[in-house]
Image (cartoon, rainbow, N blue to C red):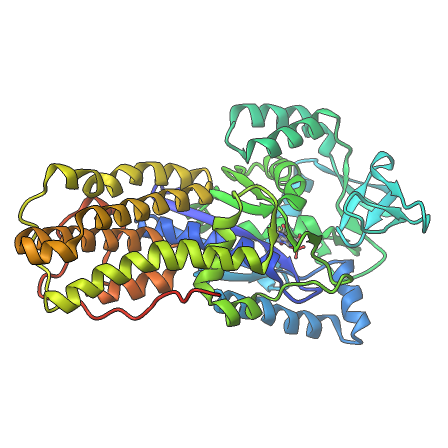
Length: 509
Ligand code: ME8
């Protein structure tokens, strides 16, 4: 693996239903991480896609009276369209019904078999189609009213008894614990890490990895009666998408980070490294599980009829606003509640008052009073230094925040910079200086333009359109800039005339 490469993934989403704000959240977070790494000059590969096999999807197609393949083809398009609607910069969109993916999955199966990791037996136990997961007796809850048996997620479980291939997961318990110890950054945030480790410490059962009672899956090599368990098939997408089994997959493998929701941490932090170690493939470097969004305090679910369609929010408030809100409102890793009230508060305070106001007043003064012209800064005074050096100071911190997926801290740092810049405007009162000391006024305003450009560079991964819009007003484009320019003070185009800015963020009454 190339040291300068970076590989980030979203989960691949089930196509049984239309995408909603939860899917948008993970994809946007990964997009921000991918865009930052590209701006930081890493050779980046950003993967997303759809998970198209399994009983849940077969049943969803049946419900619609559609042939399963036609159904998944149609549903996958909605997810692909969402990546466009969200301005997601993915390098590839994998579908698990792709031929190449099927071959890669069978290839791994054969290696596991050759390595004596698989045996044939009979599965007797609980299965939740909603979760596509097996559960132990002690995990099952009985609903007092309906007497139905439920998985911890609330999904109903069914009793399954059928011939099945098993993966010798129990054998990996100690090796996994050892792996977590040697790789302390493997699971983030820490709260999730502790949860996973205590689950593994409680003991692992061998895992059923094939089914015989339905056929919508990847065939098990040499045993056509069986299809692979959908999670084995699904996890392999992270390898097949970058070319596995061809050696070229090593250009990006091991993945730098798989970003997932907390609902699927167990599959990623336990099953996935166990499968990989058993197949003698290096596990990914890190799994990060983010929290869960509710809608105005309630669980988001179809039966409650409170699914949030990201496109409706985009239509009402704008795409970059949504991207910003999701990452600003809740520390990445924690649960969050989506409400229009908090969205509007963020727009009025953070975007209109802080960012919008800064850009607006500085560029307007230059446009009105200096004929839009910039000059080289003549003298940096003592009281300029704090603001002038601030971007360089936070760059290192922001890089570390990105490495730990502390996306909310990235935004916090940028907003401290914005607040410093606004304070500097107030303290230096350039409108007054224009009357008293024109040269000093020019310096103050040019320092501010430089700072605004750097704010826009910092914002580019999070709000790509807004950032480009700001940069364009000062004759720049992100296409010609990188994170390195945060430490560079000479990239402003002095022959450019600052345009009169239009209002970037409208306050909401
Ligand atoms: O689990 N809040 O697919 P899936 C936050 N196919 N994130 C949410 C969310 C919410 N309310 N709802 C969904 C699968 N998500 C498997 C993955 S990967 C090899 C296979 C996001 O369609 C979150 O990232 O059920 C969650 O983990 C994912 O969507 C689940 O998507």
